[in-house]
Image 1 (cartoon, rainbow over the protein chains, first blue to last red):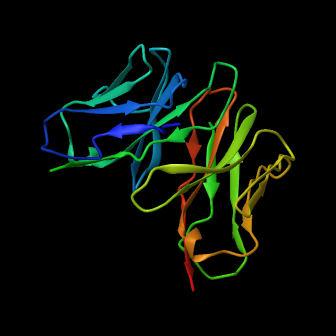
Image 2: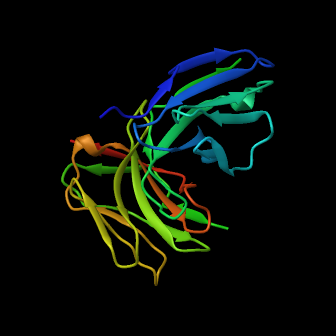
Length: 115
Length: 113
């Protein structure tokens, strides 16, 4: 069965621009989470979507937003890019329901470079 | 709040050496514990997990036991191989915070022939 697919794999953007990243979860998975990975801060939770609703949100500014579609595919958007937004953005999908903690399956990530 | 602390790297071992990577956690609810591995240029792959106290997770020769009394989940392998070279992340999810993962800072392991 296909894994988690993130597109694009690499992006180079200029400060002040905006960017949209895409994630297709494993078929049947309804939960999609996003993480930012940087050498200095490690892996930080951005937000989680479940059945098209944001269920949880990390401590990031409002420039970071996301959404989930009816087919569970998710997008995250970063507006007014800053140099510090350069990172590997990872998407994770899981079967998780409200009452069940299960493992997450990660995509290969989108490497965003802001110049 | 919830957090994970794991031993700092990098760790360099010779092939067939014994590996331990320490991991301790703080959780407000009832955590599930995980070890993920990341190879260069890749995302995270689940290595093993344990969902309740005294459970032992194991996979590919790696093992970790959920110790509630010491709030630990140390990763061990009896004989490492060059192909085990990667970054290892300890992580938890908490019944109080749903599907959010809390990750340690990662431990880089290099195995030399």
